[in-house]
Length: 184
Length: 184
Image 1 (cartoon, rainbow over the protein chains, first blue to last red):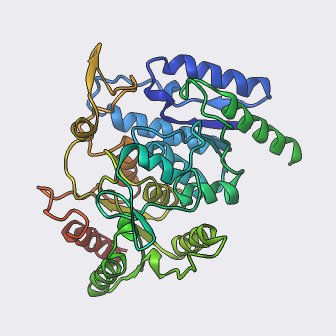
Image 2: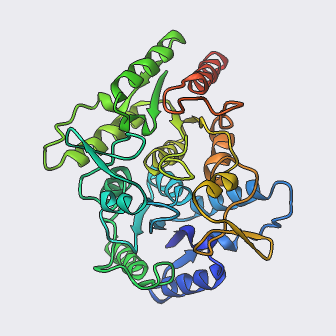
Image 3: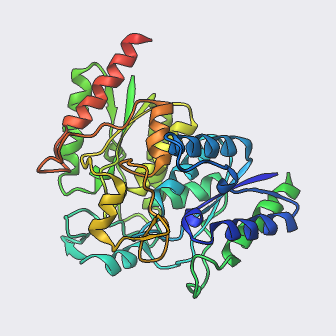
């Protein structure tokens, strides 16, 4: 069983090492992790970004499962690039798993970045846009997609000291994927 | 031809009116716009968020096309909920169109929110995470997915005064969808 390892991990300075650790965890469960940085691309090429896209899409098409890192990225919510990949895999009917190392509720997290006010019982941000307030960790589309197309989002009881390098929640996802493999 | 109208528009205080305007534009081109707010849900119900998800997914499954509003939302990038839907529709093999009313390059937009520095030629944010610097408007996964699974992202030459209510770029997407319909 091949697992596409999606996440903003690829933007970390030690992205390669994180990928090695993630694929090693998959290996311990008898699974094959596919990490996007394995697509070797010459970043100076004029079509580098298109090559990366093509490599990632081919890797997703080759995978049976996605484990997406939805830890909040540059703001209150998950990395849109990772979320695109989660949606793509759900659309393709693949098994969808994900984790976030920040267990806070979305509305509370928005408060860290923006002034949040109440307008007739509706929580709104500084632009007057509604803030989802269902007690979920992120946008309802991802949260319920995981329930329907895989397993519920995995979060730690408390945010780990190093949100980008603690892989306990990731490992819990791998364990769930392995359990599915045995069950089918 | 049915078009799923994705976007953070549903979070606007005048979300219903925006939906009316969008579906009216679709109608003028002989197309049917499906707007998520048409899924009537009792927001006080304990499973309200799951009902919204189910309604949106059923609407996407009924649609042939998605037009996603990728205008930056609560930060430098697109709304993750909308991006999930774009990925889902791409995975299902539907025609993917999108627009953003902010034509700025992603890396420049990050500068509005965070200190951006250079680390050995790599642009990094305050957490040391790489900032994509390919001259694209948002994450490469969405930008190139649109090229491959539909039409390139539509952006205005200049950001309109009201980014949430100017529908010129949206209308350009509808026109492209209608042209595809005639061509096939």
